[in-house]
Image (cartoon, rainbow, N blue to C red):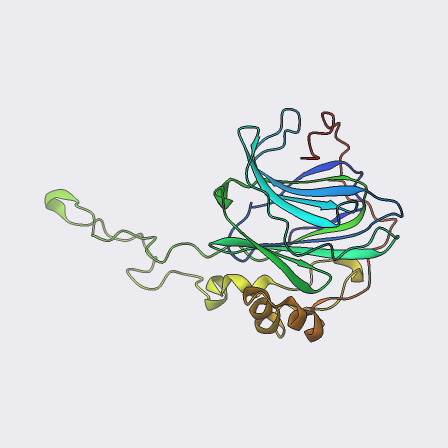
Length: 262
């Protein structure tokens, strides 16, 4: 089931990530940096609390004064070692931007404006990530959640037949099939988890990567860390969602002081 996107959330904002993070899950954030902005942060948190702050699996802090993007994590209210390589691809002059965060088994990958920016190896288990927070000097128009959940384990049935005592297995109900393929089984139910990379904006708000034809091109470019190819393949578009569409999920949250600004 497609997860509805969030339009024009009030900043600062805290939103649950439906289904959490898992390999193949991607977050798409589109917004604008107002002139004179000093910094803003995108956090993948292990809970909704901001004062005191829950653990943060990925802290992206865009610092326009220092001209760098700080990556870090927070555990038990203690920051880890900062990563700052890569410079500052964004500009505080009113320009729009698009940020992608892709979860992989070993790391989180970040792309900015269609170009792979960095890779952040997991310091906390990605299974703990439950919420997305955005705060600081930024206007956000769109937050999308892409990537289907992985299929159930193949060995989901009993490995050995049950023991029924001296009377054997009970007979099947009248008219019911005996021991055959699961009724209603279709191959589509077990497609690749990357097959859901595609169009997520409802109502024609976003075009670009399709659910079927472009999945190999888009997901392949992301996994390779080269989102420039993904962008050239049509995975990005300059279209933005309508400003007057506001998701019912948007909520205003009072943050405790400046603890977001590590």
